[in-house]
Length: 199
Image (cartoon, rainbow, N blue to C red; front, side, top):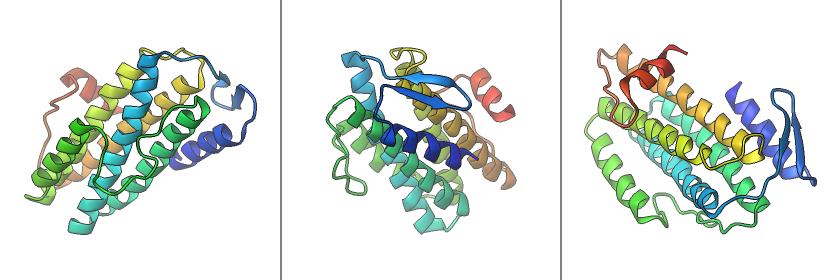
């Protein structure tokens, strides 16, 4: 369901020539003027979604675990949704010619290498790294949402990405628990993390 919804809203944004979008779940979703802060978040999130994709792709090749394959495909849809917004608002795309594991943002570049090293220790650590990535995604999406106008196309897309990250946390956490291990959140608060797990 998540993949279908993301494809629908991405294609709708791509193909609509007007400033107004209609979606069955949200009613009207409009194009607003955006601040430099929101623009910066969109450019950062574009690369951050690629970071998730590249890490999960690496882990799938290393461990062959199906969730890594499935979720890395979802991350491509997510980063394409952000790309659509960058194009819509005439913003520079830091991932226009993305190469696997290479990022314009120095913090993301260092984080990528750190996560790959941590996840190389075992499939358990790779699952923990993956949950951490989704925790960080949700935090950054929450921060970006505070700068976006409610009812805008940006707000709609970011909320969908946030829900998707929650789904990913539950998937990775389920596989971790199935192997007899737990996870202590390090980015989100314990209460928020437990709410995500219980949805």
